[in-house]
Length: 450
Figure 1 (spheres, helix red, strand yellow):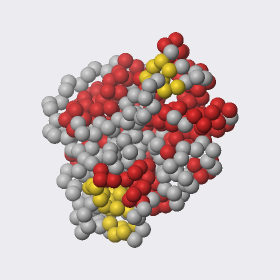
Figure 2 (figure 1 turned 180 degrees about the vertical axis):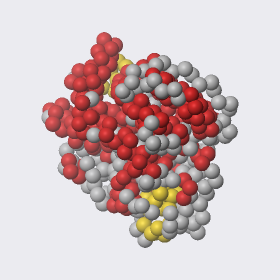
Figure 3 (figure 1 turned 60 degrees about the horizontal axis):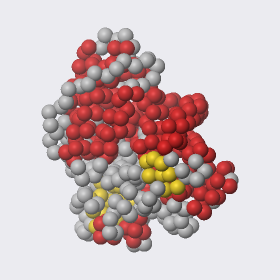
Figure 4 (figure 1 turned 90 degrees about the vertical axis):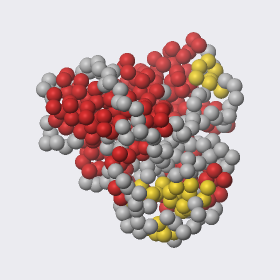
């Protein structure tokens, strides 16, 4: 426990969830590293400056594995398997190598036509309505469709994933988060088994192992699920209710990414454990759509509430890519990295952090550091592109977001299609953002008219 008292984040701003930036500005003025207490009551060392955050993201002394925490008790913190964002090399290297080839520039480019088709279909449905909630009608279904098709999740189940992830990420509702984590774990175990059957494997024993791991993992609650998404953990859930019956998942065509992961588990020398298989499925599904939902909606809201920037973009379509990058800088979908733990005493910017301490790297604060970005509180799509792209919204180092190229492509195509289709697009009602009480940075609703 540090000798000094924790800085109370809630004391620096009227509503931290709505406006964390006031707290960040006040703390950065006092230094780039502070021991803080979140409104939830959790404490951690927070790194706020851009230079310090970038270095910390690549610092091998800051480990992702919770077993380096001085407060470590058991692996019960993993609620839905064990994934890349909760591991360090060599496990992290092994896990990432299993899926990295699916997110290369060539593979992502091949998805362009399908993303455009999906966007156009959603806009066709929206057009005659004259108004709609962007989240429900466009920002959620587009990336959810793309990642579910990539992984092989049946279309009939996608609404359930939206509901589960929303509950898992909600702050202040640990019981609902824990139950959603259980239900999602049970579903993923059933889906994995259906992939095994459709691939023609006997797999009875393997299926039982995965289902058993699912039950054990689901009972742990929502804390580890939150960490899987490069965001601070929610309060630990109470003991979860009895695990729900595993729903029978429809058969899916072989050849998707989840099939490949099942094969890696069953056939390829045990390169993936039961717990890791569940964790990988969860991470790719949730991180593969939730952050992109926020990116699209946050970018649209920023443009519509900054009419001079929207006018500039409409006048010069070549600014679109930089507009997306500026939105990532100004309102990053993941405001912080996952908890890290010091494997040894660490000194950052003159501040001593003891061994076993919990560390949070604030991506949102780093992206508005005036030492890096001139006039950082201004949303400006004309910023120097090289400077804009030095934001840390996707992290840095070996844990840099694997899906960043896909998120960028989806956001660029989505914004282009939306603005081209509706030249008089406007916010329908109060323009003040309706932020979700979530571990991520996203809106509850964004009502639009055209």
